[in-house]
Length: 307
Image (cartoon, rainbow, N blue to C red; front, top):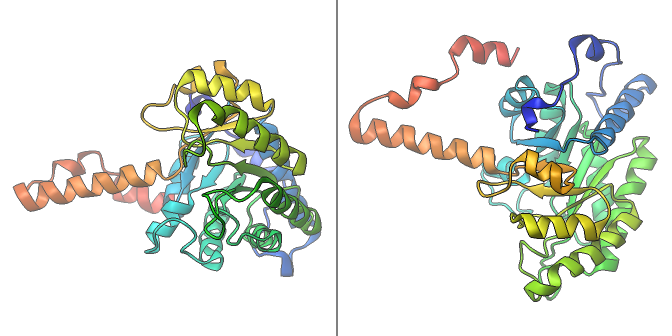
């Protein structure tokens, strides 16, 4: 099934629950904290549905509102998209404070669970990952991505034991805050092409087992798009699997048949939007015409979107 086929919460269901925490832990009240925990439970339940959770990754308030209006069940953020919007390359060049500022804006803008991409936790230590998770919780997130990349050790990936400790610290941060964070543990074995191709499924499954044991709810394996490998990963991991979708990825319906629990698109929508902006500029500067504006969002709709 496609993302649009998922049934978004009705206006009545939204109005029946308490308002989400929009302020942060320092001035949170019991009702707001309960609402944030309820949102986390909603997000976790979406990973257990027969249909994959389809996540569009927002980079600002407008994109988050567009995705919510289209019928999204939850909103994810894109670290690469937010970093680019603020003038940084991807790869933890942005500060966690700046990243959290945009996460907070997005969480305040939509009445849906928000899961935040925290890259590698902005540090290799468990303490750094735990602090970053707390900052995301204060911003209103109820889920996080945490990846196993590193720049401080030989090889592209942090060793499994230390990464598991980071996941444990993220889980502990949620417990201390009072919200059971939904942890999407990412491993870049395929994306970074670690080891021999024939060993990557087994290597991924080994890391996934450790990450699930440390408290992760879902295993994110970017860099995989062929049906056979996806099917092998789902079987080998034995827990919820997140696939990063691109132009060559099987459809959501096919991914459902393969047993995939979660489908996200990363910085794809933001990069596609930039490509459109480039085509607009090229048409105007080279030809002096405005055809690319034909399908633009009407100005009144933009105002209504941000009300």
